[in-house]
Amino acid sequence: MPIANDNQSRAAVAIQRCLRLARFSEQEGKITRTFLSPPMHDCHQEIYEWLEPLGARMTVDAAGNFRALYPGESADAPRLLIGSHLDTVPDAGAFDGVLGVVLGMALVEALGGKRLPFAIEIVGFSEEEGVRFGVPFIGSRAFVGTLDEELLARKDARGVNVRGAIQDFGLDAREIPAARLTGDILGYVEFHIEQGPVLEDLGLPLAAVEAIAGQSRLEFTFAGRANHAGTAPMRLRHDALAGAAEWIAAVEGEGRGTDGLVATVGAVSATPGAINVIAGEARVSLDVRHREDDIRRRAVDNLIRAAQEIASGRGLGLKHRTLLDQNATPMDQNLVELTEEAIRGTGCKVHRMTSGAGHDAMIMAQQVPAAMVFLRSPGGVSHGPAESVSQEDVAKAIETGSNLLELLASAKNMSARTRLSQAS
Ligand code: GLV
Ligand code: MN
Ligand code: MN
Image 1: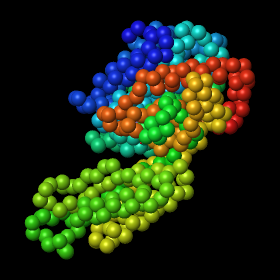
Image 2: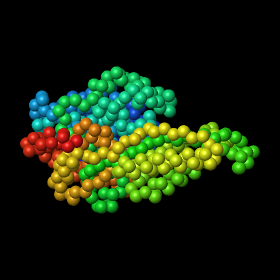
Image 3: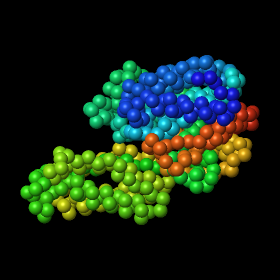
Image 4: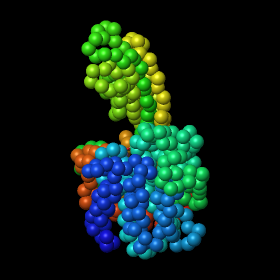
């Protein structure tokens, strides 16, 4: 693909690249690329070929993160990280995550060979969605040193653990400590589709993200008694799935009843799973989010209590386990302000918002100043094949990114670096 030389053409190339990477999938006719699944090899290879002409040094670290370092003016220059994730939900759209990686490339290409007072590391994180192992951010956790033994031992639906998945991909989990962030880092910037309707409603192409909502993810198992659907009278049943269904309605009620809270049951499985058998067991997921951690935790406590009450009223057993309890994360205020200045420089009105979706930036923010730019999501749609983005908005995002690089490169902001880091 020829390198484009203006932001509209760069945007067109970025969109084509997202669509091209969408072809590397575990499922015929759908975009599904979970943590270190075989199509991730092709995805890395493709990105490698796009970045080779730029003279970037490329590696895949032991957690499967694709990393490309475009050098700065000097060998000891600090680094700015730009990226997002390369894994997807099942039957995904083409832009969630991937767009942030290809925009990193577009920004380096837009430099036209110019070196900055800092190096740029483009990162394609291996895992952010939490689909294969139920726990998200495997890639970015390796950057901050929290990809621990417990997580490495987690198993997927086929009984393969994270360590095994890393080995199957041709990597060595013993090298994970070497993936940690080291050296002088200016910050982390992530471009991402909004995945919601706010920017479309406001008629704006871009937003600066000021914080990312906290998330809880849990798994509940209702245990009943499997029996014949024709012979067991209704009053003598212990139907695990009916108990779970009653609780799912309570989850929706909790979400609707609390301002700003979202509570979702997105996965249910019943066993034995036959039309003429009362379910003996029902496994149900829970995802709860709010920008305030106290409100989120209170909602989770309420829902655990509700599950216990429903289970005991129906003579069911109940177990639950927490998969994720991720605090809400503010972005670095100084970097957010620079991002806003960069957006303003494109002639767009600046809007600040909290992200309801989780992002690698919330993990990176544990160690480096982090900021995000959202691009309008047409129809507010994401996590499905209807996800899209407009070329004009992508061009504005590239312009914003180039402005941000210039702002960061200016002597004033380079010397404010310590301030950025201290603020994080
Ligand atoms: C990631 O997309 C999330 O679930 O927020
Ligand atoms: Mn994403
Ligand atoms: Mn996603």
